[in-house]
Image (cartoon, helix red, strand yellow):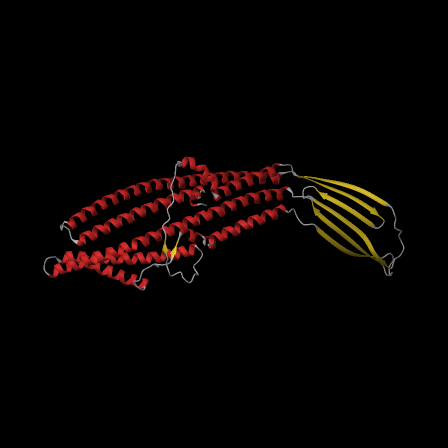
Length: 460
């Protein structure tokens, strides 16, 4: 008796909290405004997760252009002044000079070439990531949408279950007042009524929370009509899963942005290791030409792919002492500088890189196992969801036969109206559970297809 009383008081406290949260007992969703899943998808691009992935994708495309560009041409101007004293106390000879130069980059060096290829691979990975985020957001949206739809379908059933519980309680109360029922039975009926009331209010609260999360997923949290929940439409699609997990593994791996990123890391490290294995050398070619006080020089750096042109000339001379006479002769020259390194730094760096490649390969294997496990887990959940749907259909058939039997007895005057109402509610509850099992199967199937990168069954 004490336990029953505590449960009743606990139920009353829950009711007070729920009524406070919900405010009023009005319908939790609009009877006029509707929202289809296709309409909900139109606003999915407003989602912050999608926008963030889109910006990363656009950034990776820009980084390709950046890494493709070997470098800018540079123009340099270097003025100079030189004073020369020939005797003590003279004013000195001052000469103004000017040196100009221009540098051209004729191509990408080996390091820049590696970065360019890495940027191209990153671009492909970001494209996969954008598609993955879009599929995952569609899945999240469908889960929220279908869960909210189920809650809306359950709402009228809960209302009838509350009415039935209230009717049973009032009938038992009359019997108790007439001495035909015990207090324990009356308390059980009151507990059933409180449970039905709590379930109805919890349903309303869950609908609001699901709706707010759904709007946040659509990127519409600032919408003024967010408190108005529309009536959702059911979404059914065909389910055709013929492949076993082992046949889907390759498709899952090729659709994974994380797997692609891991592979690209190994490729980039391998290219770096191959570059470090090459001989460490550089060649500098520098032709020059001089005529009087005018100097022309050019130089080409083989490693950096840089071509430099420089021109130096005198601008003016003050207090000329005429101590020297410029020779107006043409002087041409050519110098070659070959630089050879011992390669020890590259060898040590290469050893570190090879170790890192081995580590990244282990991470790739771990990523492969993780995706394979996720695939097999979802597949087992899919098989279980199919069994749950079959059981729900069988339960509905049994409940429909029971309702038919109660209807027959009611027509023969052998059953009460309350019995017929109870059988009808039970059949509706079984039908709702069948819909719940169907939604669970569709959600699991969509999860599998999202992992495999295939949403063609939705038209995407």
